[in-house]
Image (cartoon, rainbow, N blue to C red; front, side, top):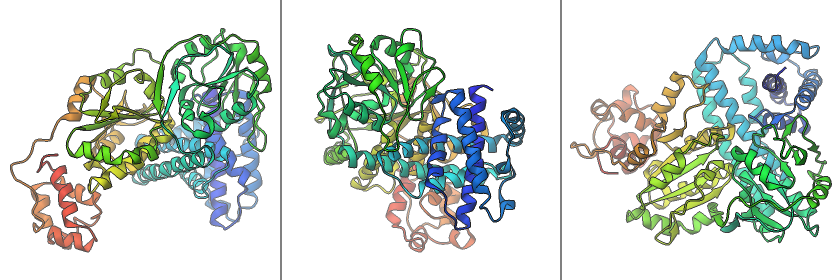
Length: 592
């Protein structure tokens, strides 16, 4: 079977195990912690490109099915389980037939399939964040039951589109929760991120390059390389590790080398020393570095040595360190420094400056660019977008996409750098926290009252989790580039566009113009709080959805229609002036 097919079988086995554990919890029975961890590990391994080792995937399938058989014996009412969770193959020769059967069920309703794919992508992102926190020794007792409950529901192929859509919204909420867990875990272990100048050049000693996002593996390597004469460099999202005080002060923690995993072929070739991949989409190693690349954690590739981790999450890097001592120092690819570390504590400390600059319109717009990167070198949308931004804007960014433009210096605005690198994609949590604080400081009813435009690169599962998380905190009018994933149908795209204002990117020039365009103001003037709900909706049909978003779920009920806006707000415990402000802005009745 192909790697893609083996990942699909492992996903199916994981869902079937999750169905059993979910039923055990319903029956008030214990689920072994080792099984919780296995489910999270499996979701990480089947994320796009993370593990491509057929033998490892096959072993994970067998291990997962064995756990399911054992736990299934403890289920009192197996009849309530989804039929596909009872699948118990005699061997790998039965995998292909089962995949064909599942594909037939998936294709019965294209929109339902689209939403299941969105949900699965989001779950894998959550699992990635949770797994990293688990390696540091932190967990959230609510995340595992949630993952397993939703996995179980993806096996119910008669589930309606509406219920699947609601599941996708739940995923956004738990994405926020999982990012918060990892944020807290990192801060507790390594200290709160500080603004840090990160070296982009190279030193004269041999080095080891660590890629992916597993900060615990990096910590182990830094500890084991002390006094060896070997420097440690980061690559891709681990660049953010330099901001943590417990790591940044180490003399042999050299800097960041190259860019994202999208440029791995070139970066790895020129590094000269060993490369350790802890996650991310690993491509088949090129001849120039095939004899000095390793994987650890959930990452894997056939033929690449894998470094085992013990029960204390300690990886033995001795072989890698010995090889590094025989290698030349890295070849320089870039020079200079970049500043990163704009986590929520740093952004909180800048709160008065940001709020003041937004209020006096020194900052007309905050452009938030988050998400994954891609291997296509011609993909210049983001770099062109950033270089086209007017000087009354700032950029906040996280995730690998930043490597497309973090070599551009945009200067400062009111003493603040116009580019603020928040960190890795899990640090979307920091952005959410800062944006919600800005909303409160500016006295806005919802987050869309803050002048933020969102640009999301949907290149992998964690980026989908980040998008759903932004939707969870109430963000609207998000630009997706380069396009929606292939599995999203036109109907589902339409639902997201209608409800959350999603749009696909156009040209950088067109999008900059759209970001800074002001809505035409209606001649009708602002809403009168004493207007009846029915009169508001008849005059402005879009007002019904706006009111429901504000918390008036029964706004179209017969009785509610004949209440004034003030009366309806009182019934729902809302401030009429806050709701009026949202209506006025959303309906284009006042200037933004």
